[in-house]
Image 1 (cartoon, rainbow, N blue to C red):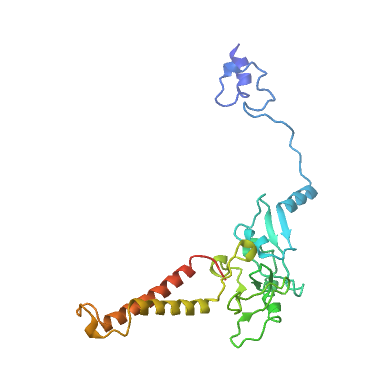
Image 2: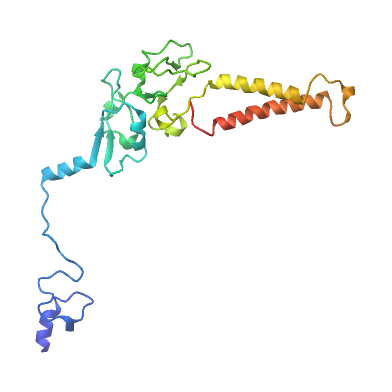
Length: 260
């Protein structure tokens, strides 16, 4: 092949391919090696593009159980990769929109953001607007929320054995759930038989009985064999340590699992 003929094809040879491999037609009007065009690119219409965008975003507005929406709070996406938007309203008034975490919150005007109602989640898993729920609660001098039953399912909001009400607090959307809201019953949540105050009193009673059984307080000084190591004062100190130890164990285990 002449020098002039060789140069006529060199411009079509992809980088890294020897010109001797080019027969003049091999790379003419062809994609580079390794690239195969199956179909010609087709422009997407505005309508199709908007439809694809709608498929990628799921707007949820008809949920009433916290367990059905909490899985989206951290990531804001479902298992299919769709972006989740929670457009929820209070199921009591059916008017006020509820505040949800930023990852799943719909876009709102700054002036509308102040009108979003904080959410209150009950042990049964139903959630309501905090402002509306106050109309259902019993008056309490402390200002805290105490409710006898869920307005939807009538689930008792009380501890089974002592009968004291479970304290209900607003769920703050910008705070991690772990620090403020226990698992609900549909999430295998736990409601102890007794409230925390009753459990503490029981632990204190048991600790006192154990301490006085192990270290009696009615033993005279003369009855101790080793008066340098044991005596009424020593036993009093040991009883205090034992009672404190029981309470410390109780408080530590309280923080080890989710419960109301």
